Length: 230
Image 1: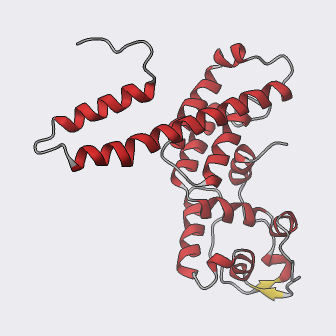
Image 2 (image 1 turned 90 degrees about the vertical axis):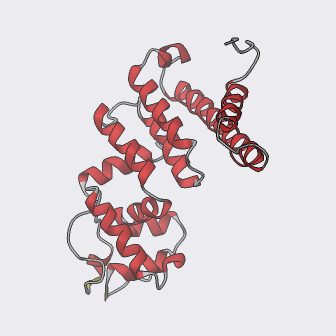
Image 3 (image 1 turned 120 degrees about the vertical axis):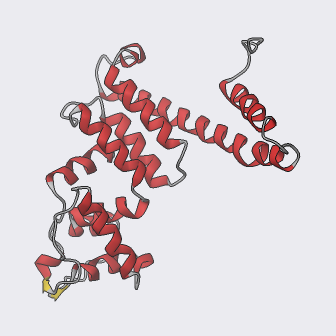
C-alpha cells in the first residue's frame, strides 16, 4: 500500500480511511458516502481543531502561571500528556460547553501543585465524560448554595424552612417541576461519591439546612479539579 503524502493532515487521512471503510460495506456508496462526508467527517475535524486551539491556550496560561514551565517540559511530563490525551478523546465526543470547559480546566490543573493523585485524575476525567452538564451544575450548586447564588447573581430569598428541592428549582428555572429528572441527577452524584448519601432533597428542614454544603471531600476535590483556578 502506498504511503500517504507527507503534506496530508491527520484529518485528510482520517477521511480517506472513513471513505475506505464505507466502500467495503455491501451496497454502500451513494447516500451512505454522502452521510459520512457531510455528517461525520467535517464536524469531527472541526471539533478536533477547536480542542487543539483550546489546548494551546491552556499551555500559554500554564507558562504564565508556572515559572520556568516550557512546552518542552510539558512534553516530557507524563502525567500532563496522559491527561491531555484522555481529555482530547473525551472532547471530540462532546459538544456541551460546561463539559468542554471542565476538560480544559482539568488539563490545566493537572500540573499544578496540590492537584489530585494521578489515578484520581483519570477517574475524574471519566466522570466528566459520563456526567451531563446538569450533573456538573447541580454539584456546583450543592457544594455551597449561598456562594453559588452570589456568584451567579441569583437572589437569595433567605428561606426559613423548606427542602433542598426548593433551592434547586429556585436556582435552575429549567428544572422547575422536573422532580424525576433532578432526583436522578442527585442519585447519580451520590453513586459516584460526590454528594453525601441520604434522601435529603424533599425533606423539610430549617433554612440553614436547605443551603448547607452537600458535597463530600471527593466531590470538593473533583470540583476544584474542573474549576478555573484563577
